[in-house]
Amino acid sequence: LEEKLIQAQKMEAVGQLTGGIAHDFNNLLAVIQGNAEIVRENLEQGGEVSLAQVDTIIRAVMRGAELTQSMLAFSRKQNLRPRAFDVRPCIEGMAVILRRVLGEAVEVKTAFDDGLWDCLADQGKVENALLNLSINARDAMPEGGVLTLEARNAVLDNGDAARLRDLKPGDYVVLTVRDTGVGMTPEQLEHVFEPFYTTKEIGKGTGLGLSMVYGFARQSGGHVAIDSVPGRGTVVRLYLPVATPSA
Ligand code: ADP
Image 1 (cartoon, rainbow, N blue to C red):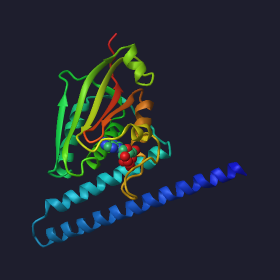
Image 2: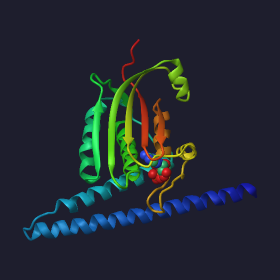
Image 3: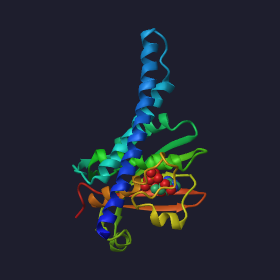
Image 4: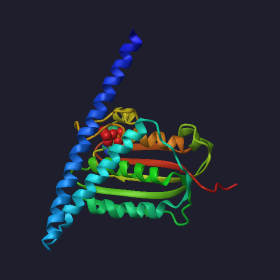
């Protein structure tokens, strides 16, 4: 009986979650439809198309992608297709989009090591992870601030690797998402990787973003580490294995 009760509670939680996501998703579709119709009308009448309207559509699509991604992660149907690739163009492309959609209050910076190694990971999933982390950074800076995306080479010795939850020592590419936002307390930090842990209002967060990024990183042979100081900001480091490890 107890098992059935637990099962029923789980089903209820899943029902609430999917209901919430479907509701959010419908709202996003309404935003996309409304703005696309206005753009269409303007074009039809030979008028000007407003960039702001197109940006609103792109923002809604980004949020939609984030939502479906968290659902996929939740259903554990993550088929990873790892291959060797250079994260630099991928981060540079993302920075261009983020600068357009995050508004003037958020300054987006990038930094790279010279001779950056190729990493071995699923590129689409890496992009989703960066998007999730960037949206968290944006949410942590309601008054604006600086969002920095970095990629660096790192060689982990036995000690470093053990501190990062028994990662294998060796070569990694480290992607960093840094913000100057509200930060987190040590108590908050303890819970951030738990599914459904969120401090955002209903409809704004699912609490699945970081647990998904964490699951993806571990499955890829990497790790996620977070440093945060309340009132100062947060640094999230995503460790990914390199494509060609040195001997
Ligand atoms: P969600 O963003 O849907 O709440 P996440 O798993 O991505 O879910 O994040 C969980 C919680 O971790 C957030 O609600 C927030 O409290 C905290 N958090 C995540 N990223 C940051 C950040 N960059 N700065 C401050 N708090 C953060």
